[in-house]
Structures are given as C-alpha cells and as structure tokens.
Image (tube, rainbow over all chains, first blue to last red; front, side):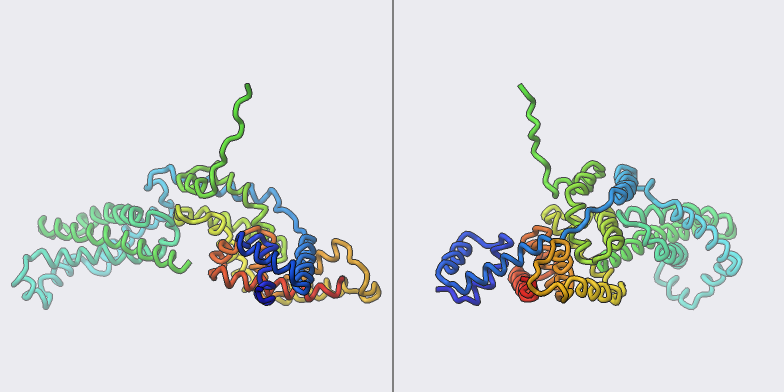
Length: 225
Length: 189
C-alpha cells in the first residue's frame, strides 16, 4: 500500500487534472482503503472549490484598440522593403554625421597635413619598403569610414529591431555615399589613384562598421533581454 | 445541403507563424484567444487593475516586437505567459509593497470580523476576498504556480517552462501552496 505522504502530495495534482491513468487509479485505490487520506482529500477538494470564489474582471476593450493600432503599423513593416523600414531619424542622423564629420575633420585637420602625415609617418619607410604605397592611405580611409559610423551605430542601434546586418549595411552605404563626394571635393591635391584607394578604404570602413556595430549591439540587446 | 461551417481552427503556433509573415488577422485571433485568460492571471498576480492592464498591453506589444524570436517548435501559450510573468515580476520589484500590505490588512480585518462569530458562513464575495488575500500572502513561487495551475488551466509541464523549473518542483510547490491555503481556510468552516 502506498505511503500516505506520497498520496497526499498527489491530491492537488488530481484536482488540477495532472495525474496519468496509472497514478489516478493508484490514488483512488488508496483513498478507498485509507480514511485519513480520504478526509484529507475532502478538505483539499473544499479548498479547491473555495478558490473558484475569487473572481476577477475582464480587460477593457480599450486595450485591444491600442494593441491593434500598434500591431497594424508593426505588421505593415513586414511587407515593406528593408530600406523603407529604416527610421527617418536614422537616415537623417547618418547624413548629418557624414556632413558634420567631414567638415570637422577638414577644419581641424586640413588634407595637406594628412598628406604630410602619410609622407612623413615613422612607419612609412617600413610600409613603403614592403608594401605598395597606397596601403597606408587605404588604412586611413578605413579608419575615416569606420570610426564615425560605429559611433553613430551605438546611438541608434536601439531603434533597429530586425535585419540588423542588412540595415547596418544600408546605413553604412548611405554614410559612404555622402562622405566620399565631400572628401573628393575637399582634397584636390591628392593623386587620382590615391583618392581612389582612400575612397575604397572609406567604403570598406563604413560597410563593415555599420553592420558590424549594429549587429553586435542588437545581439547584446537580445541576449540581455 | 448546408455548407460545412465546421472549419478546423488553426493552432496558436500556426497563427504565430502567420504573424511573423505580417498577418494582422492572425494576431487579432491570438489576442482574442488569450487576452482574458492572460489578464486574469496578471490581475491575480499584481492585484491592481490599472497595472494589470498596462502589463497585458505590454505583453502583446512585446510579443509583436519579438515576433521573429518565436520558434516553430515552441508552445505559444508558454511563450506568451512567460513574457507576462516576467513583466509581472519586474513590475512588482519596482512597485511599493507597502500599498499591498496595507490593503491586505484591511481586507483581512473586514473579512474576519469577530462579531460575526467563527461559525458564520462567509458570503461569496467575502470568501473571494479571503481567498485572494491568502493566495497573495503565499511565497511568490508558490503563488504563481497555484494561479497558473488553478486559474489559467496550464499543465505542470507548461508551468515548469514558464517559471524555469522542473515539473516535479512545480508539483511540490502546488502541494505546499494548497496545504498552506487549506490550513488557513479551516477557521472559516
């Protein structure tokens, strides 16, 4: 015969409909034979029935209206092309960032100084000895594109919920598309080939910094939420 | 000959997959299926109606925002109740418990008025208040298991996933909660 302590543990499960066929039969057999457990069962049953007296209201219909309004906008975005779902503030911030960053760099650090820096850099001899000249310009362009877009990405990654890689790529492309013409206009002294290499560096930096930063931060947000 | 109107209703999981594709009707169907059951759970858990409405709304909004995270092999009710439960816990942590205890004391005093005598059978509403207060006085882990089991009709397996525990542990908590409740209600006959 089953111990009463084990049987009593099963009584709430019986009331909640959680017992399997065998457990149910075993419990019933015990209750038929044990008066104490039968009394215990009655008391639990009474408690279970008393619990039905705790009635609560239903939610108001206003909640449904609010939720469905948000759902309509949210689910419409699913059918839109990815670029149409970019928040306007993000596009505006990216364009402004490209314009502003370029102006600040030009004012603080004129391009003839960049040329001097590249030409007189300590590592220049080592680089130029073993690598093509353009590598250092490419590296500078990479930083030029990577740093501002990564910084901006930290600011607006919270506003991007899905497709972080694709949207990050889009944002990087917008940034590069605005920055490169400005860079070309601001440094006519560069050789054409070096302009091309540095622009390539900017594009690489922007297209890796944008999706990289936003994807990473979105992942962190998902892991911690 | 009448047309067959007994259409097979899609499962919650299929509806959620449709929501992921942008189907507003599927989302509305899920809302209609679960809003009352979910609200009753939340209201019993947090007590305040306005708070419960906010949590209900936030639960469905989070469901929407995180729709891509729902996996095909998941059970929708577990997923939804987990969101709601976590919101309730976060809300209660920041809620001033003093208001809850003061209200509980008032209800207990009214419900156990000694002038009525211990043998008086309590009316339904009074007993409802007593049950409400006694369940709310349970430890949080027992309280949530009892509410989910009794009032939300979820299985121990589902409850275990929601509260991040094993079905055996859930069964134990349910037993202890019922035992505690039974002992406290004995004085009311």
